[in-house]
Length: 551
Ligand code: SAH
Ligand code: SF4
Ligand code: F3S
Image 1 (cartoon, protein in one colour):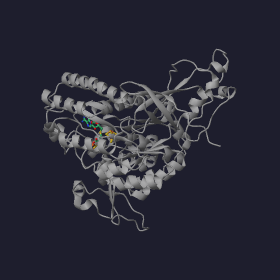
Image 2: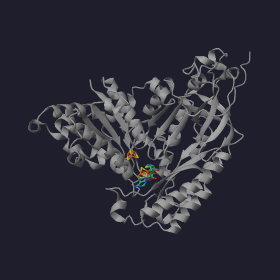
Image 3: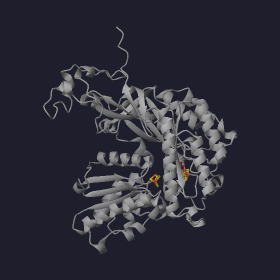
Image 4: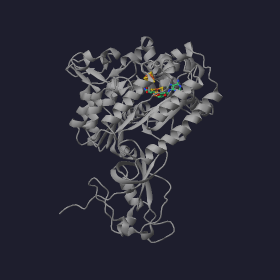
């Protein structure tokens, strides 16, 4: 069996897709490597959202072409949004690419690989239908007989995830669970509705079952994924298989968010889904979701969050622009006033909530006044962070056809930098407001540098929270991976080790543990930390030892 290198670009959806592809292929016997030079199958799971994202993937595809021309026996596959957007043009312009697989077709990838391997072993004239090596939603009508026969079920990929607790530990015991595929919003700048297709909601029972399995495998945090998660809506009894199982279903669109349908007992809303997962999977310590759409985010969701402590106090709700004129050109469907009203409602229900966002600068026709309005929103909303992007015209979108990309790159860059500086100020204030408080941190990794003063191994009698008692006597403190200090010092001079993780509000938090062994064992656990200090993007704290166990 050949060895596979899989590299992922783009959003969390793609990260999840790559994990599912890998699990699927490993179950078929493929080995994966982190080293592209050691692989004979190179797969790139690509993103089209901005030109820069595509350029990164193109440079990888170029390097793969060089290796092929030098005579290496390689199979090169382009998966994800770029495959879907470029379509078979990609094969014409980049002949080193052997197969294309859109994000909605990933269950067919093993068949594509077999077909591509067969084609590569034949001489040009004898090669079978090139459509055997292409699975794109936009091409279903042209699908070859071989692929139609292999028509699988994308839903099964999510459900059958070969979940590996070892890998989860490496990824800080955090997992993504898809609730909605695709997007119906058609913001004028955005390729996602074109690459991921129409909004399709998964049945709640399947989602809950997946969360339960992940929690049983030791996952500490599930992040529900959808382009506009709060538009999740599943109507029962309309999409059922012969066996009685519910099927994923196309979303009802904005119509459903007028109140008449909201209280339909045959419907599971996003608020109800959150409540069910929280209540039916009590062993899951953290539940969060990405990305929220500022429209139609009802008080029902906020009340469910407020009454359920294991739902994280974190909302990622992109505002995109502070100018109503630009929001309208973007087809975002809300005004700045509505956005601010929403933020006020969030903070009223959840005073501890942390809010993050996305902003696009230099959208066509954006004036200094429009940009000032965006700065005003930043000053008004306590954003913990904002992802700031320069507008990038995308082929196939309404904006590229309708509006000239008339803001120069120089102006885009200047606005981008100005917003970054303003966001740093706001982020500094938001993080500073946490100093002196205690937070629960899901530890994700050991950070490289190990700063602060040394402590003796006697201090290593630390018990990490949540029942994970690893109080170590001085002699055992040296039993971790770095037990023997490189300079042959006595272990009681062990250097403290800094770990990093996130709060329920997604605030990055760093703190020290007395030894490498304790630090390693803390990864993937939730620890109580007192915040001592802060910066624009993080909190610094000290571990709060849990109270002694009462006898
Ligand atoms: N579904 C999410 C966002 C998905 S894309 C939402 O609607 O909020 C992630 C972010 O990329 C967007 O929020 C937007 O800020 C940015 N983005 C999308 N298309 C872009 C483009 N053409 N140019 C620049 N930024 C873009
Ligand atoms: Fe793109 Fe808008 Fe859909 Fe977000 S909501 S994925 S920005 S079209
Ligand atoms: Fe990129 Fe596709 Fe995600 S375009 S942002 S990978 S949905």
